[in-house]
Image (cartoon, rainbow, N blue to C red; front, side, top):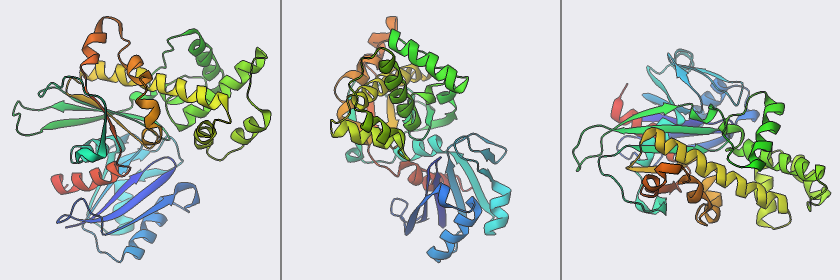
Length: 336
């Protein structure tokens, strides 16, 4: 069984060929920058031509909501449709799944060296799991425990669009951040704060806020460099790493605080006493920030439920291709 698996995000696309006999080892893989592609279909055809493989199943993990086999991606002007892809590739078995659903399938197969423990907690072996992942956008998923057999992991995986629910500030500075996002976008969602573009929004807000109070120590040349960068989130991270940008360091700290708050909200909604996982491309680059206590402080800062959240295991996924692997795993298990 030869599978074309894909992880289609707002910025990049990972495609790979898997053989069901070796589901964790792709036979051929490539990465594409989305904005450089003529179209999604042209990219698929180009990849298959280069792979020189004849595939039987295509499973694509997509950063967006899928309704009746169709997805209008929110962070790029692509519309993916199972029937259109079927005609383009002349392959009978096509399935689009949410990228967080794919990540959930993939993370359940990862070895311990691909996972970093942020909080050991006291796991409930019959409890639900939850997954939150910030990248270009913010995704969330819940893994509902199905059955009570402790020797087998059975979960019903449900994707969501929880990243687009209303943002909730929890201090005076974040109230001002909320006002800034409102005025800029007309709606303030968690994704506007906890994502790559969200990090850029925080930095931009801080620079403007500090400038108003004439209290900024940020070099104007550094600000110009960050604001003109193609990927502002990456530029902020690099500037913080070099310690050349005080506001970049502050922006990342606020980002981590809000990531923890959003994750804690999800853990409560999912009642994920079995554990909460952090996925996405940003977290592995910021492991020092995730382990310095700030994330867990905000994760557990939930009033009367703080003690319960202290017992929730929190783990960070280090494997960057978990969603890609999960798409292949889904195809092998479900054979749609």
